Length: 203
Image (cartoon, rainbow, N blue to C red):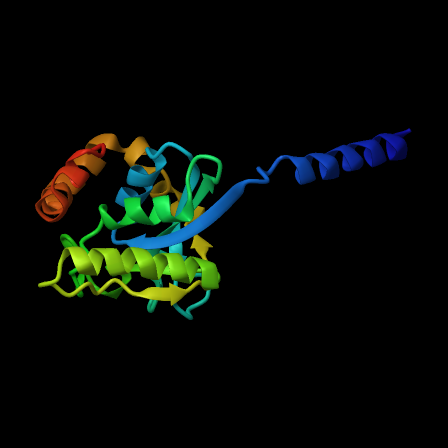
């Protein structure tokens, strides 16, 4: 009996596993400085179903926040519903949530791991990313847009003892808001993007 039940449960689990993921779900991996802020900004976007904080872009295996993450960017992996959002929509939201002219980091956070970047998985994503970047370049002809478009590599979600960084803005809202304000993120975004930045949530 146990073997029959086990077989049934295994079959049910396999069936569920193949049905549960949305057929129209897609992912984007983006770096925009502090992943607390990127996670907060994207989770409030209608059509985004999940945002995971982590590291990508470097060669060091299993990077950690307090350990070795040399060469890696702080980044987020965004899962979204293609019935509600396109990849271009995701990138349009990305641009107005970063400072594309900062070649030292983002806002008050400086250093290689805080640089902005778009990580593309294929030629189609690269073409869309290049199109959106060209639009930003055209909008700011007197400034140099330094955000690169890079090939996607292994994404390492934050985990283990450092899982507190995931959903930090929800777990520690007072500390998060204090950090964000003192970092000058929203002030700088409004300075660059005007009403486009002002129209988004600041929490």
